[in-house]
Image (cartoon, rainbow, N blue to C red; front, top):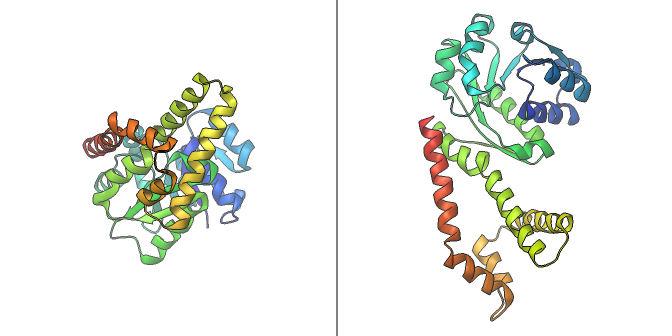
Length: 264
């Protein structure tokens, strides 16, 4: 199986790194293109793959073509290579806001297309991706797409109507989590803890708390109740968060992101 990658940015690198690290593809099976020489050199050095400047060269001979460019670049790239993409090739796109209909319009009808929304934790092998496909993709090809996405985290097949929700819930929400970690660390620094230690403690706390949700199967509210002892320290913090509208702010932020994803 040969993979052609259009764009050598961070997310494409995470995918390539996951595929090669797990032995799903050998470096020799991957050809990636990028307009910028520095990106090509970095990808070749880090993963041992073949890199080229020509998008057409990346597509030629590939069984799977991955679009990993910025959405505004897609029309010009699609115009360049749409006639080179074969009906038997599987096309995967990680471009935000580009619907299956938009991808089909750019690449032409009859193409096999899988739309994906990954997130940046893919860079450390802990991503979560939502994906959907058009009617030209077979069940076997859809399973293959799932295997590829599983190389850098977990993957959930969803209807396209929920792609904007996935964009806000997992694609954009790492930014909110980083802000939460930063704010907790700032508070610890204000109370005397060294900055590096504060970041480490805050990040590990978030990591461990997430694992508790995933591995225990308990409702987040139940886990919160396990920490909040009567008249204890935690309930004081929880009460302050409620006073400041913490949950409402998070809900509004995620929904605002969903709205933006729907209207891009």
